[in-house]
Structure formats: structure tokens, C-alpha cells
Image 1: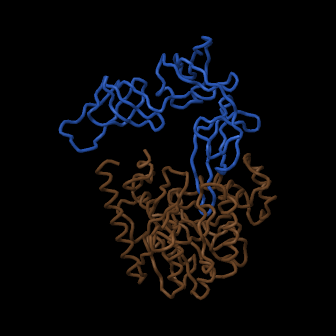
Image 2: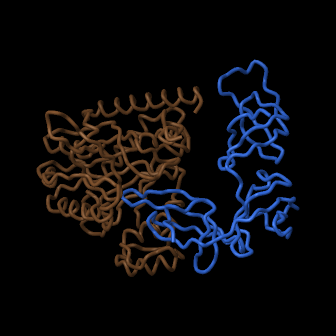
Image 3: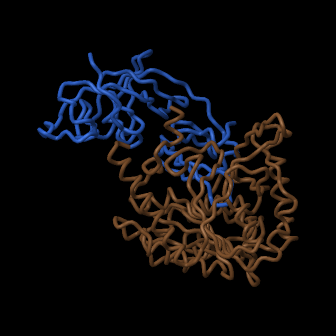
Length: 187
Length: 330
């Protein structure tokens, strides 16, 4: 059992016998009311989405899950194809269960994945990842306003706002939770 | 925030505050300035407090509390015969919740209007926003206000009529029918109400204009008067862009009822906070009778950071606060 206030994105819960993974969590305080969390939960197997509002002090049934390493191979537009690195067993998982992950995962990279039995519940992307800048607009000459930004596109296709000095071919660190630029990486 | 955004936020706050001061001064409301540290608080079980220590070689040490709202002092002024008053103050709420809508220290505008009830306060608040808003304010954050009772909203968005579900057993059954699973059979009516409200109603409230949600269930304890004919309190909340921004009461003056509120709220605090590191504030037994002789009063509290967010069309409180707490924690 865990307290609902401790549920985070990625926490796996058993609700009415079904596994659900938390995909969104927001703290809410009704006026003159105690603290609640508004959760969006997803059953990775069926895709069913559940909206739950729990008191932060409520108990929830957390399920025991295993973390295993999986290598990301490719996606075919519908599914992610991955391989368990310990058994070389391949698996497929619908892309819609992991929205926008195609912009965060790099081909050939190994990720920790959360399984409940043989069901893939979560792909853990580190919160800070270095990406190669694949496309960048040229900075406008003379634009010296402090804090000016522009968009760049990473090798994975992720579009992020970053400072104007970032050039194509450079590496940048990104916060994958907020999808925000953190810093330039010299290598 | 970059420097330009910071300067803009500071200038906008300054403009809005000065417009609001002008508005209230013109209406002959007196601006007051009351303490941030208090030896007692009004008990509120749902608000965690900050405590600190007065220490001196010459006086006994004393625990002090950062105010979660200036209410305790402003009501005292009303009881002493002050006319209508307003104040901008810093308020402090200790809580685990940090996020886009919360900062542990925030700015509050409170105004107490004598000889007015909560309905009059709606008109006053509407006029205030209309006359004081920033030029850049989007139309969804400007009057005319929409108005809806809490029960109308429950019927519309959860298909549930509170008038017919006053018993916990009835509301519990409705919550199950709505598909809420995390519910406890033995919890309070208020808890079940909040689950339903937060899941089905609040996310669906209209956002095209500011919304006044009025007549809150009497089961939610607070210092507002009861309606005579229905199981609701004379209290409203204002939502702008889906974010709760203001709260208003027709202020309770009845000594016995205030005492009863204190007793219930304080026993909840003791029950929930004993054997934890949460602060259990001292309370003042003289407060019950404080408003006994005061005229009818309506009090409004507006979260200024959130009001500024709505007028600047920013969805993160850190976009209007210079030194957000979450930055300090990094």
C-alpha cells in the first residue's frame, strides 16, 4: 500500500484487479478542503484511461513490478519494437500507450522498462538526456536581446526552444519531463 | 523567467495593485496593515501552518505562527468599529504541494465590507476587476461574471442533485455509480462531495468568463452563515480560466456557531497532527464573541498571484513571482 500523495508519473497500481500506470498527476486543493491528487491512469494492456481523484492520505494498492533492460530497435508508426537484453526476446508495444516517446527514445539505446508479469507498463527515460541537434535555424544577426530563443530539432525529432547560440551538430541536454532545454554540452 | 519577463511581471503587479488601491480608496475603504506573525490562528484543518519562536532574555519564549490569511486581525478591526477595510498581505501555507498553482508564500487581497452580504460582494468584485484590470487582460478573465450554484454545477456535470443526496449513504452510492473507485464507505459527506466535485465538476466548469460558484454545501465547515431555506452556506468562490482565485463569505457572527466551528476544526487538527511534525497552532478562546456586535459583514479573499496570472495569460504561478520557492529548493 502507498499513500495517494506518493503516487508519481510511472507508479503502477492495481485497481479492480487491473494494472494501471499513472500518466498524469496534479495536486488540487478545493477551497476549504483537504489535499487531493487528480490522477490520470492508464491500463497499458487495454489503453483504458481512468480519471481518479484521491485524497493524498488515501491508500492505493501499488503492484510489484520488475525492471528489465530493453533495447529500442525501431518503430513502424504503430508499435515500438524492443528487445529484452537478457533473453534477446523481442517485443512490440503500441506507440499510443507512450505518447511522444518516439521523440525521446534513440534507436539502439537501452532503457529500463517496467514489467508487470510480461506486460510492459513503463519505459523509463532518464530525466536529463543529451541529444544531437539535427536542425537549427540560423540566429538572426544583430539579435542580441538577452534571453532571445529559437527552435531546434534533435536527432529524435524533438522540437525544443533553446538559446540562439545553439548550432546544428552541437549537443544539448534536455529535461525529458518538461521537454525543456537545460544546457549546451561540450564534447 | 528571463529579465524581460521579470520586469514585465513586476510592472504589471505594480500597476494592478495601484489600480486596486485607487478603486478601494475611492469607495472609502481604509487600507490596513496587520501582522504576519501571530500568537494564535483560526483553526483550519485543511491548511498546514508555519511556526517559529520568539526568544528573548527578558520575556518568556513564545511560539508564533505565520498567518495563512489576515482574517484573524481584520475581523478584530471590524469588531472594534472600523468601517470597510482592505489589505494586501503575504500569507503562508505549509504544504507538500508545490506546483504551477501553489507557492508556500503568496499575496492575498482581502476586503471586508460592512452592511453587505456575499451577493453584494459579487457586484463589488465584478466592478473592481472591470475598473482595475491590466490593459492586456484576455476577455475570458474579464466581467461580466457567469454565476452558477454549486448544486446547478453538480446536476449539470455529475448528474447529481445535492438536495436529494444529503445523507452520506446516498452520496456514497452516487459516487460508486459515477465510477469513483478510491472511495471509503465511512468517510465524511464532505470528502465524497470533494471527490465528485474535483473529478467531474471542476475540470468542466466554463472558462470563457470568470465564474462565481455560490451556495456551498453546509457540510463543508467554514465561518460563513447558513442559508435559511436550503442546506447551503452563503459562500462563493470565483474561478478564472478554471483556476480558483477568490473566496467569499457572508461572515458568521453567532458566538455559539463560531465556538462549534472552532471545536470541530481543532479536534480534527489534534487528531490528524498529533505524533506528526505538523504544526498544531494555539487558538484564542476570546475570538468566538469577537463579531457579536459587529454589523453584517462580507469578506472576500483574492489570490493576487493567480489574479495576475489570469490577466497576463500565464498558466504558471512562477511566471508572476520573483523568487519562487521551488527555485530556492533547487
